[in-house]
Image (cartoon, rainbow, N blue to C red; front, side):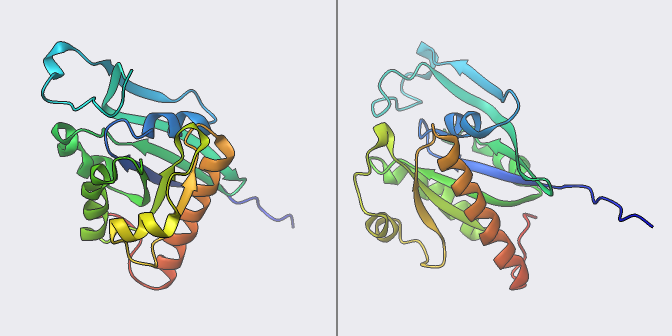
Length: 194
């Protein structure tokens, strides 16, 4: 009697953070399929609504979600859903997060204030998450512990540096999130979004 091959498990991961922090880039860097993006041009209608002062040269924005897929090993496939970063699109978050095992909160250490809403969202809903500090231009401006302290994140929440443009770096973040979610599940805290 031959052993029957098991089907791979697929899980949902959310990539969240502030406007222009690199969520679309992160999904695209690691996706093994052509990522689905809902990028729309920034127009004069967004002047005074979207603060682009910290993201010079940004000409588009995510208006619904980004979607990608990565196979971590033959038994685990991650489906990645990137959230829009502006306040005016947060009404979509509940739908995007439903069924996720966890989230990555992508942080620009130049603009820590932009990620507090995402951290609060996942903490309030008890959804496992990791903090990924995006090293723009390959530079880490602050120590991980200093960013953690500034964000007032629980020491049990992993905080790691990453480069949202680099597939290996993003993969490391995703693996750490899966480990966090599994540890939470084994601890009985409930790893899935409601």
